[in-house]
Amino acid sequence: MRTGASSTLEAVPARADSFDLAAQSLRSGEARRIDLEVPLGAFTFGTDLYVAHPALVPVRLDLSRMVGNGWALRLRFSASLRGPCMRCLESAAPVFTVDAREIDQPGSDDEELSSPYVVGTEIDLHAWAHDAFALALPTQVLCREDCAGLCPRCGANLNAEPGHAHEAEIDPRWAKLGELKFD
Picture 1 (cartoon, rainbow, N blue to C red):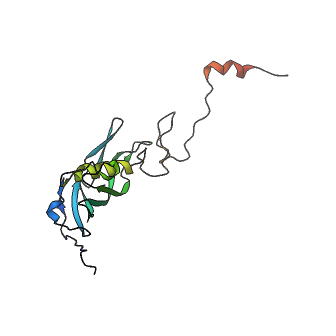
Picture 2 (picture 1 turned 135 degrees about the vertical axis):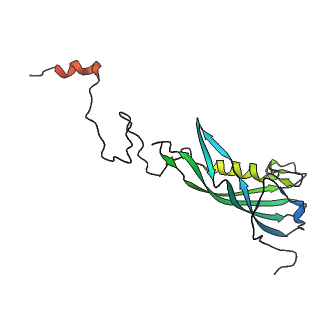
Picture 3 (picture 1 turned 45 degrees about the vertical axis):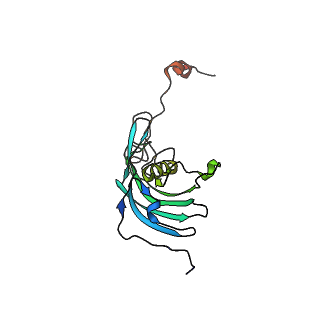
C-alpha cells in the first residue's frame, strides 16, 4: 500500500441530499469510496411525468483530495425511469446507468475546474445526481427499444397486434380520378 493513500468503503448506505467533503478529513492524495442513497426526484417530458425508481437510488461516491485543496469526484449509479412509453403509451421502466465526474479546485479562474455542485465544502448530491441522470436519458422514453407504437388510423397498439393493417382509403378529393377509364 502506498503511503498517503487510503480507501474505505462504508457498509451501510446513508441517505444524503448533500455531503460535507471537509468531514472526510482527507489529505492530498487520499481517496475514499462511500455508498449513499440519493433521491433523484421526478422528470417531465412535455406534459408527462416520469419518476426515478427506486425513490432513494443507491449511489457510489468516490472522493479524491487533490494537491492544492481541490477535489476529484465521481458519482456512479443505475436507476429506472417509470412513466408512459412515448410511442405506445403503455408503462415504461427503462434502466439507465450514470458515471459522472466533477472537479472542484477552489480559487481557480478556469470554469472547467469549478463544480457548480460544490459550495464551500458541501456537495449537493441531489442536484448532481438529478442532472447527471437527466443527461443520461434518451430523447424518447420507450417501453422497449423496438416499440412499434400506435396505429395512426385507429390507435391500436402495434406491439399487441404486429400484423395490424387497414385497407388503403382513397382521399375523397382524389376519388373522382378513380372513375376515369382509359382505352
